[in-house]
Amino acid sequence: DGGLGADAMAGGSGNDIYTVDNVGDVVSENLNEGVDTVKSSITYSLGSNVEKLTLTGTNVINGTGNELANTLYGNGAANVLDGGLGADTMVGGLGNDTYMVDSYGDVVTETAGGGTDTVQSSTYVSSLGANVENLTLTAGGYLGMGNALDNVIIANNTGDYLWGGAGNDTLYGGAGNDWLDGSIGDDAMAGGAGNDTYMLGRGYGADTVVENDTTAGNCDVARFLAGVAADQLWFRQAANNLEVSIIGTTDKLVIQDWYMGAANHVEQFTTIDGGKTLLDSNVQNLVNAMAAFAPPVAGQTSLPPDYQTSLAPVIAANWA
Image (cartoon, rainbow, N blue to C red; front, side):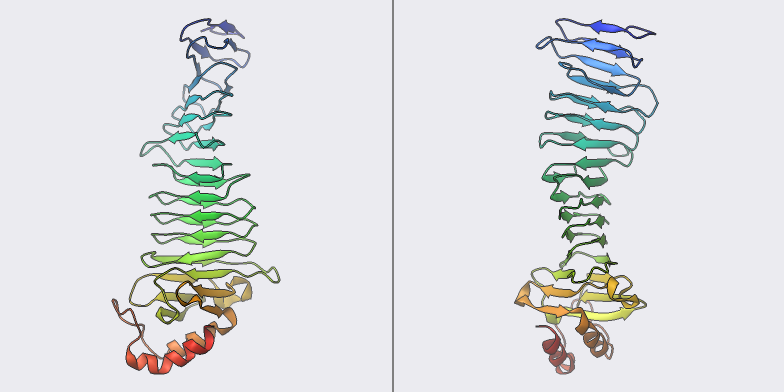
């Protein structure tokens, strides 16, 4: 510990601990001279051959690793931890921390109640660990997966697959052709620009789609997963929104502000079962026909016979 002033510290062999409190402090270590630790009360980047960094004090400061497999510890404030090259372990502690992940070997550790934390990842596949709330895919991202919390997951502009997991998640696409799958929970999904696909399946809950894309020729799709047939979908207008429900369940897709203009539409609805497609220009035909009936009751997974008499021809004529 050099104390006040810009100090030069060289530990030599052994597992050394350096206390850094001045931007002019310099830590020097040679290769294979133990497992060394810097304890810093200022924003700090590890020099070569130092393995560990612990941020101290109560100030909002940041920590950066080096080319080794580092271990970085935050303090009780909101820290940005970046392990740099190597398979790093980052532990944020309290505060709303941000973790920079650029290696599949990087590990983020958070405890319950440790703030609202964000991973910014440039790896091809990114999965949030326990107790981390938010994920942003940066350059190179493709698959972003949430956890059991209420996650916010943000795509980059290359075309990504976002999967929310359990929890009431918010998924944001970028400028690419994104796939957004909220999974379990009442999720909100906004694809942004590009030809985006929104998924809904049984047990997914009530999901909301926000579309506002005026790009000519774009084709956004609401895709219903296996186990959902075209004649098991119920279409209704709810204020300015379009609601598409899986009959007999509480699962539904709400297209926000559908009736405010074509920019708020998805252009197609598709089903895996039967390979059917419904164009947005034909949706109102189903809404009008189904408005004459009450939706089937809970547990009713197929249309009653009297419904089929009136609705089956309309469904067949509009789903191709």
